[in-house]
Image (cartoon, rainbow, N blue to C red; front, side):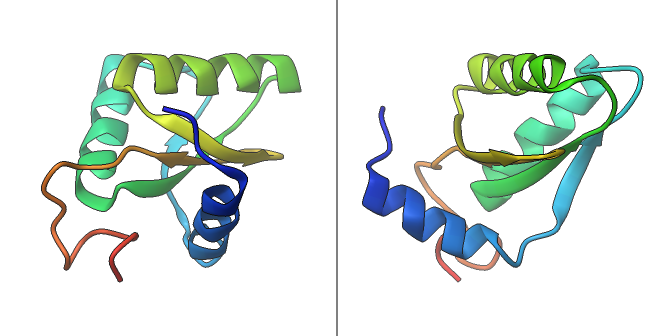
Length: 100
């Protein structure tokens, strides 16, 4: 599902004050890191992920792999930080960054 420009603008506004929840470090995207990103996306729906090391091409490949494996979408990617969205069927209003 494609995100419209108006929705992206709103999601960037919501994500501006968020801190990165998960950091992908030198070991790359392991199963444990991917599981933690999936858990965070299921809880919060909109998260920031910090990707350390590598050039911009390697970072974009990691972001594509995360989104591909978790059925998520990239809202924005600036520098080392990626803002990722995965809408939940039954979001928890206390945890969801979209409903707060």
